[in-house]
Image 1 (cartoon, helix red, strand yellow):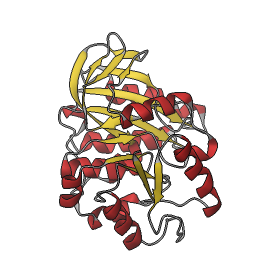
Image 2 (spheres, one colour):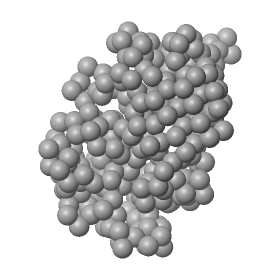
Image 3 (spheres, one colour):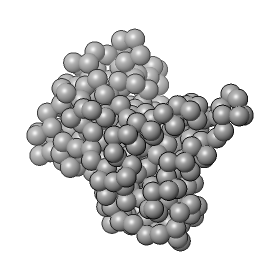
Length: 286
């Protein structure tokens, strides 16, 4: 029986929801454990930075733990990046699952350790119910099964290979200028967002452009941007913003990657090599 340890690097959920989360994992055949400070709360954070970091360090190096899953996103994981024992975490090599705000943590782990982690699944997914696609790809990751994503929409045709990086755009951009920003040289960049106006997404992508990150990419994988609609129609759409930044790069680009702040999404590995076939609309992980 695999041991799942749940930790809260970012925002909290209510203690009353613990039983729902615990029941889900037990029903799926896991031995589920919670770190000591998981259900604390300080403002919008799941307890103090020190306690969240201590729990995360312990969970990611615990000899009895097989899988570490973030409780939820929200906000908070970037605050503890400089409190983690990356050397010990690399040696222990645990599977970490998370989503949204946890993107910052996962990209930092990749930068500091080279470890692969899995984006798309937080423990609080169990509260509202887990979509079949989310569940299927979660277990593919747990069991180290190969992931192939098809039916992607070709935007710029071509084939590219590289390590898949990215996730929530806000979190990626928040790492720029820090020691935790991974190199995007030769990467296949995944982009998703939620509750951001097109001009704000434009601003974030432009920051990446000015930093020299976009012209180093091997390919682009555009995901769902939930509720990213302009108040004024004259401001245009997110799709138009994406086109203005990515279509002239001369690299393969696809859209409609089933990932983002939507129920029907996949879990995919951050930092794993893959082949993007933007002509056939496929992403094949090694």
